[in-house]
Image 1 (cartoon, helix red, strand yellow):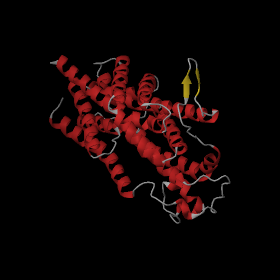
Image 2: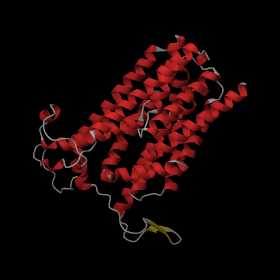
Image 3: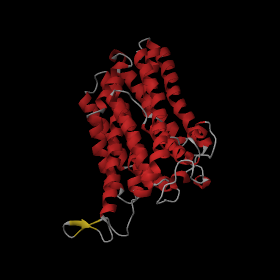
Image 4: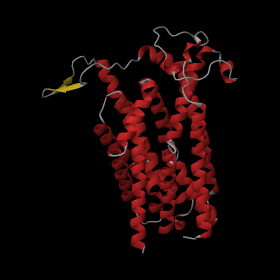
Length: 379
């Protein structure tokens, strides 16, 4: 019976990691693939390597937090571990059905918290610390990108251009050399795009490896080294399979979002999640990235008004063309730019509300379902 449960637990862990790999690869390498800098095979290969590296190094702190600091390790019986992983897998399924990327970190923590509440073993100070960072991190991501969008982005946009010439970036004849028409600036920009994508993959692995294996590591069924390798392998499997579709989706969806804006969003959100992972805090990369996009667009759009007017909500609505506005060689001062920055919505308020609703709903549901299960069916 124990062997069967362990096999089921490993299969569910692989399923969770597989889904993480599918969604995270699109988030990390969508701009690189969409701009033609790398192909899907190279993106999947880099995702597999750097996600494993993130899980193997920084991600261990998150595994230890989720595997024994929210609730004692003694609560992670094999059956309880399988149940927690099932909640994460089902949450992924539900959110994908509605087209909303769930936060696997928040959902997994919710399921573990439900177990702790049901057994009266929840480490409340640790849980309060985690939830506090769930609130602070998106706000921090928004304001960092808002400041960049309002005061820095226009100057970067005027000087930093990633052009794309016709033909291959690099040719092999037989030694590698720049392709016809490829400039050193284009080549340097392509290297930067790939480097930041790899950094994003590292942060995704650091944050998400624990979501797939922490309960199994917590109960001792799987040693932490093997657990990280299992999570890394499952993420790689998702990167080489279902991520092909998400790479298409994210690459196409980001065509209205300039590469420069995408890179800023990735650097800010990946850095935030890497730091939190090093502190052992499981947090959502998707939530931080989304709030970074909103903050960058808000900051860029509100250059047409004073800071006081922007904070009071006066002035233009946030728009994607606030980021994709025509490049200007001379950047006007704040308050002097025209209202033409706001032609189309950066994000649909209704869609944004639906996404935030599901981000709150999925961990809440996993916590409630877990609490009810472990209250009435002790495992």
